[in-house]
Image: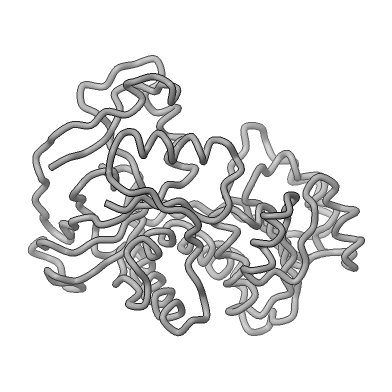
Length: 336
């Protein structure tokens, strides 16, 4: 099969930043599905791993990355019970296994779902990683429920991949009043299209939120840069509120700033369940199936904004270059 990877971490202007190569098609065992991929999407985690995982070294074999795909199940392992050959699936995969930048991929059935029937392969490929992240941060980490309807949420990074679907889930499923950050006219318009009630400029966050009529916010999602916004977040969060972040932090987070308000704080990493083979790992299968139903009902919509044609090193370089620019709205997909 054809695959695309890299042996060392290089800038995109280097010829070998991505390499096309032939490798053996893998065979499924245990709970694995062998998926013939039809479309993939690209996420910030892709370029971060490309930039850092093979820095100052040359790998013996190219590393294949990519965490979002749709495709058809071609074969299954002997323990598979959730799927059968011929099923159309979508999934985000496992960060510790070869990724979706290839013609075929193995994925554990517990982290895959049936593709939404109403969506094209590329429209579905835009969703798994970001939809799982948004769902987990809202409903598994913060544990938003019926009692929270009408409360407020501030989504920092509203026009990005996670923000685009988090706005929809917070508004249409959780019933929250949604504030999202954006600064460019096109990203403001996108956040409003996704369902945000208010769009505020992240460059003056506290004053913008207050200008929108809110003194404090019940829930705050950081999808951009936790330390950069931490002082504003600590000021805006409501006493006994909840903050959750997906971005990590190069420096310690000053949690003492929220102690007086008895605020809860959570990290969210979509790969936790698959990395640690948690006892509730199958939850991602159920979440993806639930999201597929909501998409087919029209309650949620795809966040796809741009599609490239063809699995090639050049298209992956082009996609990574776009994401590295920091100006991507919604999701970028490569159709095979």
